[in-house]
Each structure stands twice: as C-alpha cells, then as structure tokens.
Length: 449
Image (cartoon, rainbow, N blue to C red; front, side):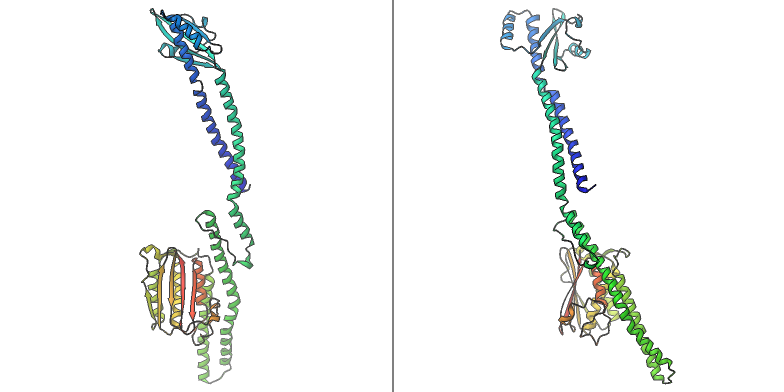
C-alpha cells in the first residue's frame, strides 16, 4: 500500500475515533440534562397538588383556580395521591421500581422515566399520616429533540469521516510532494552522472535531512568511483615507468660488464627506482583507501587546534629546515567550535600533505597556518611564500599524479593533494585554493562543525 493511502486511512480512522468520542460525550450529557427542566415542572406540580389536596387552607380554592388558569396541563398529565401504607399498584398506572419509593422515604423528591413517560413523587406528612404525591406526564418535545440530536450526530459522524478522508488524501499528497521530488531526482542519478545533487531546502525538517543524507552518500560514492577510476587508469602508467627502468638497469648489469662504476651506478639506480616504486604503491594504496565510506575507521571528536600542533611537529621531523607558524588570533571563545567529528589519522594525513607541500615548494620560507571558526564551519588556511601555481594548472592539481608545470625541480608524485581532497570530502568538507605564480599559495580546508 502506498504511503499516501496509509496516511489517508490512518487519518480517517483517527478522525472517526475522535468524532465518535465527541458524539458520545454530547449524547451522554444531552440525555442527562435534556429533561431537567421537565422534571422541575413535574416537581412544582407535585408541591402544588399536595398543597391543594392534602393541606386545609382557605386559599386552596384560589390555588386550584390559579393552577388551572395559569399552569398549563402537560401531555398525559396525571396526579396520584394516596397513603404511603396503601398498595402502590392499586393507585398507579404502572409498576415503579423500589428505588423510586426508597428515595421518597428518605425525604427527597424522586424521579423516574420510562421512554417518554416521566414520574416525580414526594412524601408529605399530614395528621400523623404519610401520603405519597406522584405526578406523571409525557414530554414529546424533549424526547423529539433527543431523537433529532441523535440523527444529527449520526449524519454528522459519517459526513465528518468522509470529509476527513478527503482532507487526509489531499493533505498526504501535499506533504509527500517533496518526497516525490527526491525520488524523481534520485532516479535520474546513475554511475555516469554521480556529480548531480539533490536540492536541499533551508530548514531542519526531515525532507531536508533526507536530501542532505542522499547528497552525503553521493559524495562518498563519487569519491569512491573517482578513486577507483583514477587507480585503474594511473596505476599501470605510473608503475610501468620505474619497472621499465629497473628492468633496463638489471639487463645492463647482467651483460657481465666488469666496469664497477657502471655496475654501482646501475645498482643505485635500481635502488632509487625501487624506492620510488614503493612510494608510488604506498600513495596509490592510501588514495584507494581514502575512497572508502569511513565506517571501517574510528570516528571521534577531534580538537583541530591541538591537531595542528601535532602536524607541525610531524612535518618538522621530515623537513627540519621548515619554518611553520600557527596563527591562533582568530580562535573562538567557545572551545566546542574547535571540535569536529573526524577520523583523526586521516584528517591529520590530509592537512599534513598540504603543509608538507607548502614547506617543500616555498624552499623553507615562512608557512602560516591560521585557524578560524564561524557558526557552522571551521577552516584551516595554509599560506606559503613559494613558487605558486600557474593559473592554467590550478584546475588540474587535484587530479592524481598531475604536477604543475613549474615543479620539475622538486621531487614528487602528484598524489598528496588528491589524497587530501578525498579525505576532506569524506568529512563532508571542502578545499579552496588561491595561488599566484612566483608569490605563493593559500589552501583553505573547510570542515563542518
């Protein structure tokens, strides 16, 4: 069953239950209090009849005249006056329950109703004798009003259930419009267009969270696909070069030449290329692993300012001549805005690659690391005074094994920045770059807080 139908059916059932309870509430109190006025009229006639019939008063004739002239006679009105000790069935038109007489004997006005026939009675003591005065009558108006109310409640119940069904259908269709748009957009996304993203509306409702979750999943999928494609397309090319050199040098050494200088040079070349091959394999493995979804790695709260000091120490060990300065002037007052949910090792690797590149390509000039936190974003900016990146190369520097045209004098493999980008994207962050050839480069890492 579609969600729309389920919501509509559930809405109609809940409405029916609520309307039933409300109708029952109205009917109960209407039934309890609808005849209150009629009972009071009967009780007034009980007292007047007792006054006229039982008490000796010179004004009784006037009372009787006023009663007949001004007090209307109720439909089927009858008055029963008899001694309390006399058999009741001989004086009444029907058998009344014992509870009716018990209340009279307790000194109260008693009431009783059978369908549309009402009774009211009371005991009066005259000359040491107890008399019962009971008045009965019909109330066709009140009874008819109750019947009309019952009919109205039944009709209103079915009409309200029908309206709730119609309103529920339209309401559910309206509420599920964003979900249908998400489904329609997701159906368009395939392996060939993983760059497409869902529109995320401003707000914190479930639909916005769903769209954002899909986008995060697509980011991870795109990263994994790109990593896999880059690994396959580049691994063979990058691995073939050192292997070819090693094979050539081995063949040269196997020719049996007795020139120790050439043999030593060949062995050194083999050693260098083997180390290069090892480095490439390690980089390729790291690049491939960075395309994972991160669930197989531990995630924890990481203080980024503390992480930067660790990175500074690690880079200094590799580049002892490096000059790294950490700028903490823009630290927020709230320490929680310096904490991100991250894989500590991966995040450290990503930022370390950026800082290491800054040190290497600036010839150990000053490298500034500035940390800044806004309401939702924590940014780390690494600025150097190095050779910079040509404008034509900036758009390609995050491609695996791509190296800028002015880096021929520097040893590298073009894997560090792509690896850093993959890691930052796994953390739902982004990297921005600003560079000018001959002046320097600024790379800013932005992470969600």
